[in-house]
Length: 365
Image (cartoon, rainbow, N blue to C red; front, top):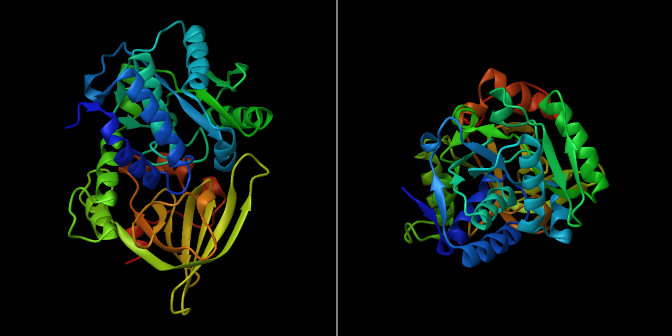
């Protein structure tokens, strides 16, 4: 079991987090820069397991919110995140004893690690999604009854706003409006928790999972197997995931994106190399569903990630390009995301997709 996160682990961690980001969560390169700089300056970060938390610990998230395409243009800093967390600490009257990720995808997996390094605090081996989602209310924290608000959003100029809301959905709606006002990206801290609440509500082991997945993709675990085969083997044998499969191979022949509402909404069309079959991946920051020859083969909350066909490197939605040769990988979401209560806020209906959730291993045979 990994006890400390070091600079030498960043490439694997970021690659795994990009895969679990399912197309969203922000550019992995920016996340790697933040983490590498913070760990080099402040030293390794202790990776804390959920069962190490005392009931009275004070756990805070440090995260970024906004459209991934804008996050690339504006960049983020650990200091921006500090403004949000410190303001929420003052409001709660409790100083952080540990930091946790809101989601284990993209930059929201790496920013809290960089922030924990700066504060000299442990990072919890877990998060609130076991993947990435586009909205603040789509977490196991929310499903377990932990309040998303009070929350604080801040920008690069030191401006911040405190949001108090009755529900996670209302907190998301208010925060999304503020993010647009802040220029379509902001840092934030939400879901302030006690140690007892965090143990009950978090998806445990997701940072370790990102490390294992990244190691498999980058090839340091088994040099003899193909990258995608290594990835599928790790996913199938991991306690959080399963049902892993290569859903489609081909080249990208069509893209649509719309960033006007604070998200990146769109679809990616992929044609098989022989031109006989096609796939359509719909996304809202993260990939939500994949249809192959007009039939749904995987749907949210199960994970759908587009990767480079040869290297298995995950490709965020903002980096998809015409002509790229890609594979579509899918796997089961963690069990905590597939309960009836969780599917209300993380299932197809939450994204206005038709039909009920069906696990990938049933949809794809």
